Image (tube, rainbow, N blue to C red; front, side, top):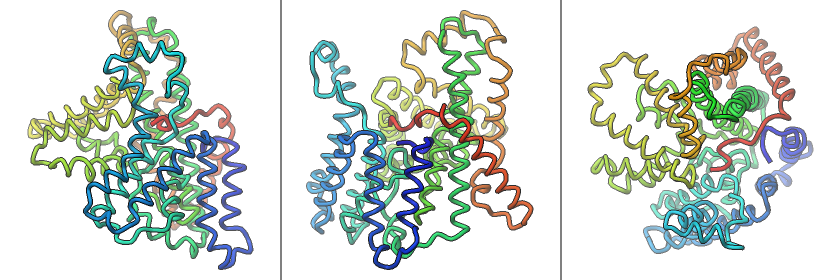
Amino acid sequence: MIFNSFEFLFLFLPAALLSFHGPGHGPGLRRLRVGGLLLLSLLFYGFSGWLHAAVLIVNIAWVWLVTRPSTIEGDPIRLILAISPPLISLFYFKYLGFFLGAIGAGAMVASAEFSLFSQEILPAGISFFTFQIIAYAIDRYRREIPRPPSLARFALFISFFPQLVAGPILRYRDFQSPLFGIEKFSLNSDDAARALGYLSLGLAVKVLLADTLGHYITMLTANMAALGKVAVIFVIFSYSFQLYFDFYGYSLAAIGLGTFFGFRLPDNFLRPYESKNIREFWRRWHVTLSFWIRDYLYLPLGGNRSYIRNIIIIFAVCGLWHGAGWNFLIWGLAHGGLVAAYHWRRAWWDTLPHTLQTILTFVIVSVLWLLFLFDFPELGLFLSGAVANGWQFADVQPEMWLMLGVAALVCFGPNLESIAENRDDGTRRALARNIGLGLTLVAVLVFLDRSGTFIYFRF
């Protein structure tokens, strides 16, 4: 199930809100909130396949059982025991085929009548919830979580449906307070307005911007050999905005949905395309993943003591986290190399005009996103158009340029979080905001049936 569907908006979400906030919810029923919200979250995930839900449930139960005793604290053997099944599940579903191909077993796998993984579909968001489970286990090992929660509360922490399949990657310490205050939470009008604001804007940038740009990209790349230079440039920047608004839209919607149930999820994007260099970009893009890699990989490797080596390692992991393929690995290594290059030549780069730094960073990031859009043969065919063909302006229609301009305006213009937060005290501004959000939501519903799955679900 996905947020941008009629089934979610008009069936699942109303049922979830009614069961959580419905009339007659006295102290007795409020005590059932954890179990009720957990069941709803598992039902939400179960729509992607009950085998996938079973994988999630088994990993949750295993890690909770192994990390519950205080003997986990400072015991590396018990930590390895705890995180091994989640890592094995991730490797099996996501990386086994790539690994066998890399060691030369791809032909054998391809010719086999049956393989253990050929019929399996990657569970939605498996990289997200695996990292979240591992972080919890490591925090227990480090004595940062002195008292473990009950199984139901731990399971809700991992499977909470607004963030389950595409983040943000949560830390238990940030989720703990509302998790244990869930029975006392009451949704007031300000929280409801915030929740609707985030949800409406998140769906808007996904459905109206990301999906529209994606439709144009599909049209243009249907015959890549005939693409001219203008179309190549359009696709590069359109996909950059499509990917951003797709993931950013999910994150905004997740914040809104979490607010409905008393949870404040962290911001995952801090206007990343305004970054002045690649290192700053990774402090603004997918923030919770960057923090996870820093705290659970970079610092344990030694941090700045072996800066270049560790940067290359963590960005290789970052690339493979996004996908099991050489294109993702090269993408990660390219970003790692650029961060290292900035470290070496920072004094020179920082002397450039700030606007030029931002433009160059945005262009570099956008070009590298092509490794997400195409595999290597497709990428070669796509780029050959930029070399072999001319400046065919007719390839890109005026409405395509208009949508690209709107996407750029939204990206570099208004602060959507401020709009969603409803921080304007003036009555007229608040009224204008509410009318604007209402019209935006209507537009989303009009085009909802053509909307596709969030791109990051495959990660």
